[in-house]
Image 1 (tube, rainbow, N blue to C red):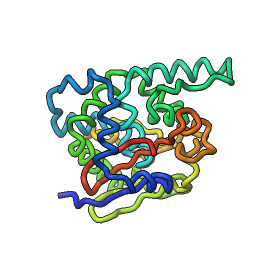
Image 2: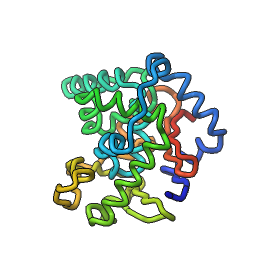
Image 3: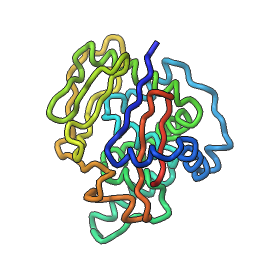
Length: 242
């Protein structure tokens, strides 16, 4: 059984934790799309969950938390991709101030926005799993990380730190102000005959979204910064404004 620990993602996020977790969750639930609140899909099996989370299981925890929060807003993710494309021709464009802070923060990672927008089925399925099976999702991520570490697929380097905290594998950005987005075939983590290989990274680093110096800092758009955490202690992912 995986022993529970708590991961706090970034110094700014600690400010959010000072408020009751239940209030943060209430904010997230209240602002989530109505369709996601009304429709409860069939629970995914352990194998299905591992396949679902494989593409982000080796991402730094900072990104896992952010993607988990943003996945509750798939239509905004589609709008975000269109915004990034349009902004290449009109650099002065600003994000919509009614977008959720998680979506605005995700704009700092265009590769992830593109992935989520172009595979909307995955985004919606992951959002459903986060809404209804949070604990199972996090357990699936830990199981894949355990195997990845054992097979030397991921280890600490100049871009990420990989540490064992109890029975949990914690992956965080090596530099708190910079995040590198990993690249790897997700099938490598769950296909029995897939040859393991070390992960690579997108060449250009991205800013940590919770720093005011980030290209898209939620606080500059909405007036309230956004932060997200993975809470291994209570098997939850929390996101909100502070």
